[in-house]
Image 1: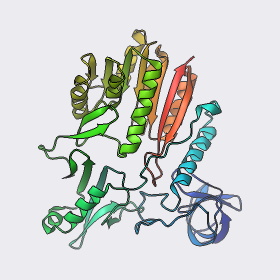
Image 2 (image 1 turned 90 degrees about the vertical axis):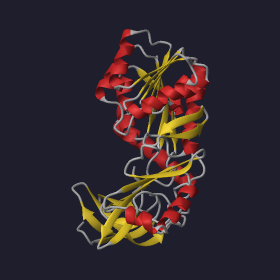
Image 3 (image 1 turned 120 degrees about the vertical axis):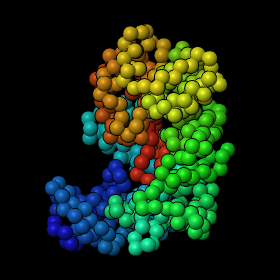
Image 4 (image 1 turned 90 degrees about the horizontal axis):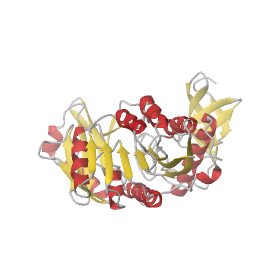
Length: 399
C-alpha cells in the first residue's frame, strides 16, 4: 500500500515495542497506540520492504482494556507506549510478547518453567531517575524529552513516570531564570532521587562534590555513585533482590560470583544470606570502588575485580565450580560471545541471568541450552511500567 492509503483493519496482537499489528491484504501493518481486538480505519505513513507503518484515522471498536492516557505528551513522547492500556493488561501483553518471541526464535522450555509475571506498584511516579535534554531555537529554550522523531525536544513540565519529588524539583527549576539561563544547546540534565538523599541533579556529569548516594534495598543500605547504574524502579529492583536471595537460600552455594556487579547489589544480597566467599566483577571503576565499600561492610572474604566479565568467567574453567552460584546482569547487548563461551566450557552448574532485553536474553538462552544448561524458572518483571521495556529473572541449572 502506498503512503496516504486508508484501510480498515482489526488489531491482531502487539509487537515487542508496543505497536499493534494488523494484516491488510496479506501485508503486515504496525499501528502505534492500538490494542488487540480493536477495529479501526488507519492511514499508511511509511512503506518498508516487508511491512508498513500507519496512524489511526478513527476507531470503529475499542478494547475494554483501553484507558485515558492522562499525559499530554502521549503519542509524541516515545517513552510511554502503554498509557492507553490498563496496567494488568499491559503486563499480560508483555508476557505474551516474550513467549511469542521465544517461540519465533526457536527457544523451547518446559511450560512449568515460566512463572506468572510480576507487576510492581506503583505503575506511575516510580522512576528515581530521569534525563532531560536542552534545545535552543531562536533564543527560546526547550527543556524536556526528545520526541518520537528523534529531533524535536518538547518542554516537559511534569513526567507521570518520575518520582513526585523529582517533578516538584523540576517545577521549582522551571521558575528559576538563572537555572534556565545556565542551560546550553545539547546539555543534558539528570535528576536522581533516593529516600536518603532526596533529589539531586547535575548538568551533563555529576559535580566532584556530588559523589555517592544511598539506596535502601532488601540487602540493606547501599552506597551508589551518582553516575553509575542502579535500577530506576525501587519496587521492581527490590523484587529482583528478593528473588535472588530466595535462590541463594535454596541452593546454599559456598561461593557467589556477581558479574556486571555495579555497586555490588547482588553480592550484598548473597552476603545477607550468609555467603562469605563473594567475587564481584565490574568494569566501571567508580562502581567497583562502591562495591568494595559495600561488600567490605558485610563480609571479610569478598573480592572485587575491576575488569572484564569474560576474563573472570575463564577462571571458572580452572576450578571446581560445582558449588558456585553465578549471577549475571549484563547490559542490553547481553553476554559477549567470549563470556558465553567461557561459561559453557566451565564446570559451573548454577546460574542466575537477569536481563533487560528479551531479544538478547533469548539469543543467550539458546546458547546456554546448547552448552548443557536447562531453564529452571523464568519470570518477567514489569520493571518499567507504561513503557515498552521489562526485566527478566531466570534461573538455570546444569543436569
